[in-house]
Amino acid sequence: MTRDNAADILCIGAQRAMTSWLHQALRAHPGAVAFPDFDPVTSTSKEAHFWDWNRHRGIDWYRDLMRPADPASLTMDFTPEYAALNDSQIAECKALNPGARVIYILRDPLARAVSAVRMHMLWHFGKDHSEALHLDATLHKFVQDARLAQHGDYVANIARWRRHYPDLLLLNYEDFHTDRAASLTRIWQALGLDPGEIPAAGQARLDRLMGSRVWASEPFAIDRAVLLFLQGYTWPFREDCARELNLRFAEGDRLLQG
Image 1 (cartoon, one colour):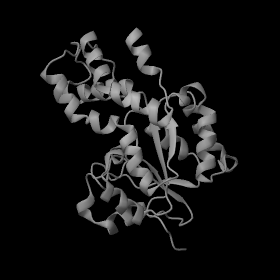
Image 2 (cartoon, helix red, strand yellow):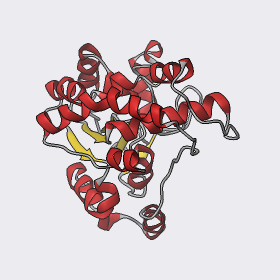
Image 3 (tube, one colour):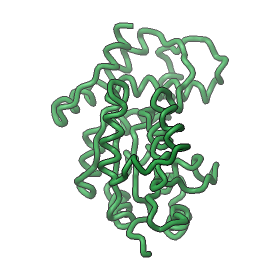
Image 4 (tube, helix red, strand yellow):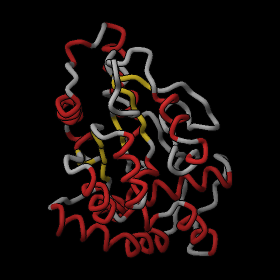
């Protein structure tokens, strides 16, 4: 059987928006498979990082990595960094994966920024660090390292990807909390996967996932000034989503009220 795509399911983010949870959920279905774990060349069996870490390895490397044992299976590459790829990189992705379904989960830009900064704090200071994050040079380093501008500009990212994948599937992170089952049903349908084919062991794993998170960053104290700075930094992206996508978020408001 000839395969048209190297990867059949691409999830391009957003970072800190339940992409790990969704990857685990889809793996419960026998028709969706992960590539082998080659960490640290890849990030576990979830993120191939072809266009940001591994492009120098060549297209044949990516094809080999993504090739499933059963050619009829749908292979998954869930690399959130792909959201910020440029047009020529997305064009190359389209040439490699012409029939892939692309999923983009959007999270409140402020809440996503806070979560990303917390992740970088965890990496930088370790989980035992207890001092609050202040409005200083360390914060600005984390903002740059997390590429908050590139990953927060959803409208620009969507425009680039839709030029090549007009059927890009957009999901609201908050819907996974209000009605996770309905969100997953929508994804099964978009991918052409029948959840009735999930075996008993996979269904048990999926049932556990329905009430859990796969990845949660360690909580860190953040000065109010930092939160207000991040609100201002991400506000244009939030307004763009409301104006261009008719998409509104509530998570950031809860952070500000808390």
